[in-house]
Image 1 (cartoon, each protein chain N blue to C red):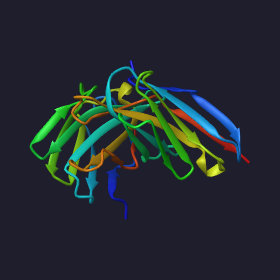
Image 2: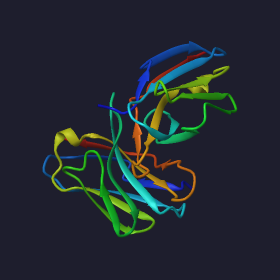
Image 3: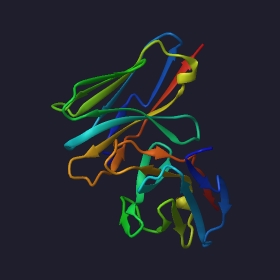
Image 4: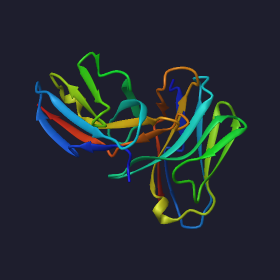
Length: 112
Length: 113
């Protein structure tokens, strides 16, 4: 089964609203990363949070990490139609040889 | 120009054919990865390479082989393609000792009939 499971699988919101996506994982990690994928295209790195960090910001993005619950959330504030994409969390496992394990993704649709 | 390129971008082939997907990068990164993406399953790691002479199997290597011809090039081969290898294939790169971010190519959409 996947190391990362995202919730919800799909999310539809209006422009200007906030979007929150969650990621749960199963084993100890070095870091957790969020990537964005526009339809049929390559993934683009958004933000990385290390296991000793609890919160990180980048522009309109806010990521939290709770290692006791093995979960992370990605918040996109003041969403725009251009934010429409799939969002994936990826975990780098402790002792995992620097490999990333990806979750199943959340499809976000931002409507005008 | 794109830093990570993949060729071809789309390929339709028949069962039993040998297929090679190519990845090139101009980022100067030493680490390269091949993933496949299937609907609802996210990305799964096929093979990865930490350097030209260092090749490692990923989560789903059966039915695939790779070649790291140079630091900048990493090829994925399907020796005898089968329909359940129909998927979107991505190459990615990373610089060891740097940030843990991976940089992805645009993908190759492969259909095996």
